[in-house]
Length: 288
Image (tube, rainbow, N blue to C red):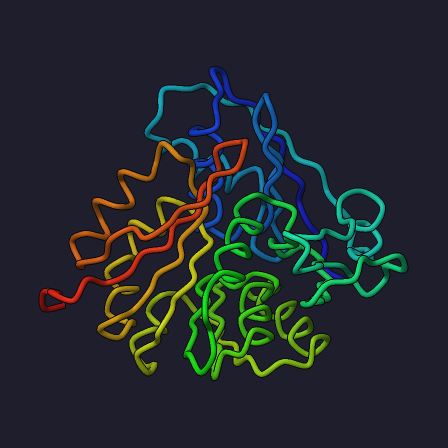
């Protein structure tokens, strides 16, 4: 079982923009899971990737926001992460009475048309976070029959699994984090769906067939950095479904998307401000 460093970071001052950006920067050096709160956040990193506290200091010393931070570290011995999720975090969730998400250890599971089994371990994406549930709602409203889907930053594989259950012709999930990629493989097998997985980042898009729809539930900074790659990976009528950012970030996302002739067709915004956009390429597209 994998051992982890549990890093505690307190910010002063602190707000959601600061914790979101910190998570984005830390994710780029291998931190896997984040738990923000009113004072800062917890971040987890596999001990094989180095001393977590030192890595966090190196990343945040370059932080481009005026805030002070304090970091402490705790060693977390490898354990049965399914048991930890069951005890502390993960309960069955029913979304719009159409999709139920639960783990293999759950006994009392609501009935729904789409039943997804997720054993999350340390990977993000159980459906409980508003970004994931917003994306699930977009997917439930989309005709996926005979479509080619790419799920960028697939995490547990939950969105790609739902796409396959809803009739997609082919689903490809791409995940840069190795433990998350391995967890997605397990979840695809649990759900007995046709979904291919690639261990890599957005550069893996270059060798793939043009897709009909691309999901990216990641974060604002990565989406803005990689949106040109997403656009090139889609066909002339392609659709992007994007999440991992707040409602106030939507103008930034739309401005970047319009550079590649994508316009908003619908949005989901939760009570906490987390948002998900559906964007479609306009017919008068410019050359990519």
